[in-house]
Image (cartoon, rainbow, N blue to C red; front, side, top):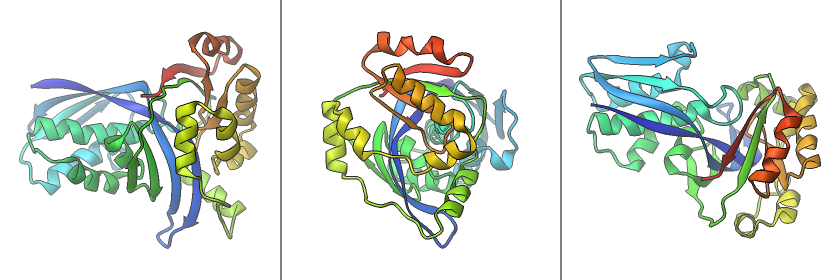
Length: 281
């Protein structure tokens, strides 16, 4: 038995840091939205666990392997699987590629091994692997709170044309949060987002309201060290973006455009950076 699953990337409409926890992590509030940029995961039976990828990642840091290992251990599955990853989502880009791959590994092995686990059981394992993994089991649009373990699905009717641009740098999530702590020793976010108003504005495509109310608290930290991120945001606006922000801990910047024709206009101005046209799911 061999089959494939497609693990989507995500954008963060906003990311607010609420407080620092005693365990060193942070409580956040964010809204994540899946987009149609995918990694492909291929599953097949094997006597032991194998993860094949064109990107070399130590097993201790490989979220796909950790997801598979934790699932196998928790449910005492005797055999294994070969999981082949074909990457299309950039690494260390703020797009959640590793977390999505881990979530879809849980979904794939649940099918391959016929474990018949429900979403709640899978989510309990997902949170042990990484903060964003639970979202990808509960998307495509959700409010994420706490350390990432509280995922509240949201529903809107609108879909959005998204341009993604990643400059040739990588940003560690841990580095970004550490820098934030250095700059904000007493923290923290000034006022929480009004989620009802946020959803209404998304549905109405009211970007005037969204531009006023939304922010990514890590953006300034990253821009201070990597000004190109701010330059890309400005270029998006100059070329007609209705809304633009850094996704997650960056460095990828996304812009929302009125339609595909408008979105395509910016592509020639941002080469040779990696870029991609996508839609929200």
